[in-house]
Length: 304
Image (cartoon, rainbow, N blue to C red):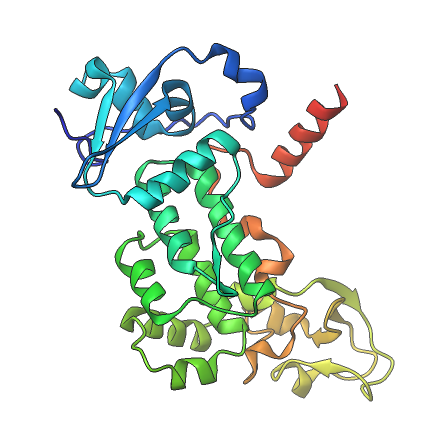
């Protein structure tokens, strides 16, 4: 039996933005199942072919083409984990993530990162975006960040330009994680530490992007906060900008050159975190509708 891998199959990129999938309206057209054999033991899954090919360009290429997999309607994925693929199949049928990502009150980020990695290999963009959202949600809810072992999954199983990496770097940069990094008994992935140092030292739009900026002219600096750079140059009655959340002021020069918002304490403005402003910056939208368009489409379907 042929073995399918992302490298072996030429997966076409469907540039058309697909509308949100509705199992309720589509299940009547399901006619066939495909066999998917997972891991070294070839654990067998029977999954509706229409679900696999609609959500995954990888499976569409395998099952609709002239490869052996298309003729036999059987795909073997020896590198995938059975428990992770179970989460993937659950998502295929429900469009939701299974409630298994907290154990003993702590987030199981490793399961989410493994699922993200699988969704990436199978080219399932919508699932990747949902996993990113879940990581941010748990980080806020449990005031936590991934563990050292999680960072090895992030840097060794997930591609370098994946938005998931940017999210986790932001979590470390904008949360109070200095004691955690210094005192944790296990080793963090060295590339995480390097990327985090670069992020903290280099100008980064996320430091400014997290603020909800509006034009503003101060009458007095008695109760006004400002970033380290702007505090030196801002004067009363000088036009500036103000974050509506943290009430910190920024001069136009700093905003123009990207330096605004940088201070010794990145996590000082607890209300102004990039992932709380707009999670879409951590998404990919080649296969799926941008978040605002998808929300509009859902509202339209509900009203008709």
